[in-house]
Every structure is written in C-alpha cells, then in structure tokens.
Image 1: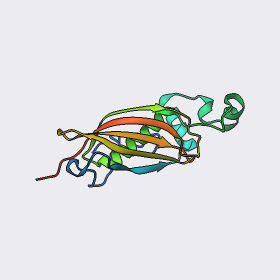
Image 2 (image 1 turned 180 degrees about the vertical axis):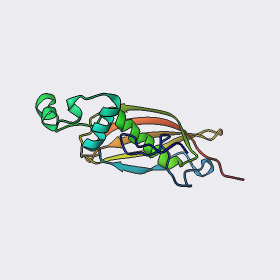
Image 3 (image 1 turned 60 degrees about the vertical axis):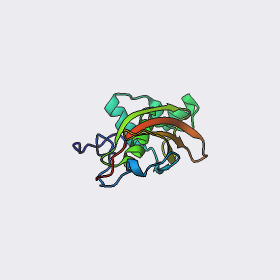
Length: 161
C-alpha cells in the first residue's frame, strides 16, 4: 500500500485504494453489474484544499456571494478535477486494494455547488480475459441531473487458486 496521505477530497491513499481486504474479483463480475454508489458532498474545505494544492484560487470555488453576483450561479462550485477524484474513489472502493485503475476519462456537463449531495454510480460494460473490466460512470445531483459522465478501465484481482 502507498504511504498514507490525505488528498483534497479526503482519500488517504495516493493510489485511491481502500484499506480492506475485499474488493471486486474478476471472476465474479459480469457485464451489466452495478458498482456500489458513492455519496459525496463537496465542502468549502475540499475546494480550498484543492485550490491550495494546485495554486488555483478562482473565487468561483470559494466565494459564494461573488459566484452569485458575478457568475450568476447559486453559490460557489467545486473544481472539475475534484469530481474526477470522486469517480476514482468510487472505482477504488469497488475494486479494492488489489485492483488498479488503468484509465479514467470524464466530461463535466454541469456544476456541483458546495454543500450539494452528489451520487457517483456506475456499471460494468465489458470484461476482457486479461482481468481488465470496462465501466461507465456518472455523477448526478439531487435533481437526478447527470453532471459528469465517465468511462474507465480497471484491472481487477483474480481469485487465488
């Protein structure tokens, strides 16, 4: 396991893995299987931690009043790359400590206001005999609007024989 370190969204492991011994196994996964949902709520602390790490201090991400009056939003919004981290966290928790995210691509379709509960969901779209599994993911807001769509390839652990 990688050295524990906190990322801007709260994960402690740089490889976005969990600390359990469980996780999806290639032999047990079928096309169409749903990944467990991950519920997250972006906070002002998440936005500020990301801004500090990336030197990206745009007011739209931490100043609610400025976001309302200047950008005509409902308030401050979380940075797009943090949404990608949420997807990686959902994949890592599903795949477990022996799984590896090989590819993750996402597209933001909308914004995520700070304090708004989000749901990361996904499903398996393909299995490859080398243990690689393709997935399609989404992040939705409380109004069931898809604000992020994504695809990923994950190397899953094989059953021990």
